[in-house]
Image 1 (cartoon, rainbow, N blue to C red):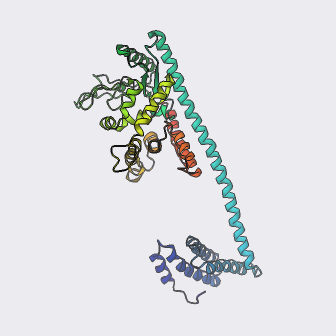
Image 2: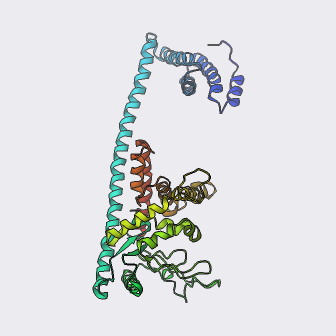
Image 3: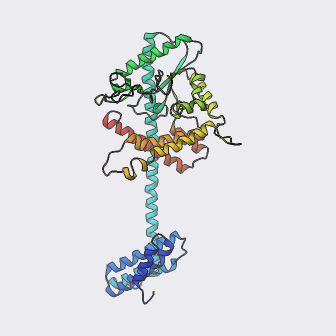
Length: 449
């Protein structure tokens, strides 16, 4: 230990090296030595603890540098502080260096062992919990299947048998196995016979009849109907859409009639920019919406939501045919691929959509950064759930994973070796927590919120 230590020099060196551990070790040692020497003079317990804390701070930084700087000197300082303390306050001068080293080591090993036990327990509980959350959302999807099947069978009982085989396929959160019991119903109809002609009107009437039944659940807000006198979405007048329904609790209802929504078999009406579009098609015609040129013209949103569908009612063979045709479209070489690149339509769309999703829902752009308010309320859907769900859907496109469910996308990424076990568990936990928060928020308000 130096006889003469200039504390001001040590402090200046520490300030100059505040972001560089390699420049912090030696000034910390000097300060520790100074406080240890002071403690011998003052017999003040606080001086001993300050010296010991400074030695340990130096040891932490030395560990970060793989013990390139001052390890032996640091350990000697810690041991000397310990021995001097005992000598000062207990007159015990027989404690050995090895005894102190072993005691410190055993305490650290005890703490590391206990922490590992709790960490393993927590991870095990999270693993169980994420599986339970998955089961909840799987069963919610099943609830929608049972509900729609019940209502459609009632409709068929009144309307008579359909002109050909068909399938109602869910889109959106129901297809992704992320729906809450208050989520919108987004779906399309695939029918088997391309030659049915005017008989296609059966499916339009069926959709209207089903809509009547869903409205009678009492959870459809009026703006979702696009009633011209209240919410004329075709009007450019400032007061064209003025009615806000704050009294009807939004819950299970058809997707809204707004031009940017309208994800039902009846689709959207014509707008200034786009023609009318009906989502009652054969599997072949529905898959055409995934053509690169058409999806660019329509905007990726519709094409993307039609990528991920699940059977609600009807013939699974029609869904299987549709999925096969969609896979063919996505696996063709993209026109954006340059030179000898074999990048597919799906890969390019996935990358482009991921960039957009990160920009739109990055935490720093919404609920963190300048937008962060102490005690403020969070939007459970937009600020917790949306980003992780979208990113997993984007990864599904990039890596050609055809499952609509992000839960299964995670498992496929792990099975292929794209992510490891730890990453799989972390992403599952993130997805589970985000969905659970959203689900609990909706239950707290007993509506979409």
